Length: 385
Image 1 (tube, helix red, strand yellow):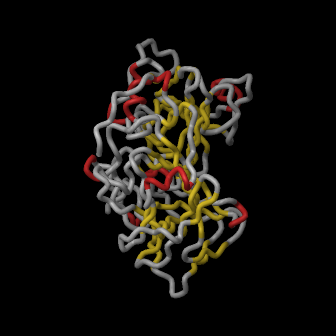
Image 2 (image 1 turned 90 degrees about the horizontal axis):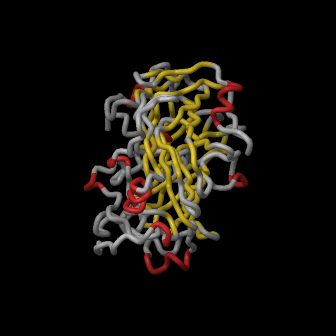
Image 3 (image 1 turned 90 degrees about the vertical axis):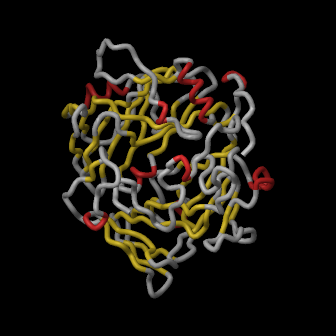
């Protein structure tokens, strides 16, 4: 990988911010970490350095949390705190490990507060480890009736809506459930933009996939893989909680049932149940790009294809371009009806976005990235391999 050039000024950046530009945002005071509860007189600090990924920033829970009766967004005239004053049911203190009940809705203040310069905005995604346990998260910001979109030049607090779907969960202040991606003039790429960086998709055998990709507008579609020994997992009904304060300690058998390769290249999914699958294609994210996974449109079926959807530069690429792609893991839930899914059915769209500068580090196994070498429908990092 070539040596990155000197970091440009924040004022001249265009595109999605790499890690060194996120560090510059933090150094300028545009991102700060407030650990205490409301009214805490302590001076804000800076986010921990290990929270900065190649092109994203892990956001962390504060100790301040509220149970609310349902999902709610602020109007243009309202702060999130105004909503809590109206509908907050019960305050929780996350300074110690705390149980969040399945199917309840919680608003948790994030430690990170923003004072973004004009022209710089952000969007957020659940972390992959969180999506794989069916824990839904969405970010709220003041005066903004949209989830997961932080307006350009935003100053204020960030809150996280948290809804455990399949399992009760245990959380604590400092745990990261979602991540922020910062940008100035986000640049989405089409097939022509990415042609010089091909191949981007590989087959399981390692050969480049050049004839099969389904490009449409600014994204390439990936398909479902039902032709492997374990094609997926389905969540069990259990009252055992998933403890998010530890990594690698849970027995998968307590929470999931493996799904073996079907006799016919299709599967029947039950409405309302949670499944984990993987893509047939192995995807590669070159250093100059990041990728957001978007659900396949609803005309392809009434199901949600993922919760977590951001891939840092270097995913499936490696430190020196030596990796021949990595499959993406899919979190699937049927909405209205039972449904049948089929091998090689298009299921998600991958949108590449250009970075404002070459990142100083990449996502790969050598730096301890949890899913750099995943194969098949890998479970969350909270479970034992």
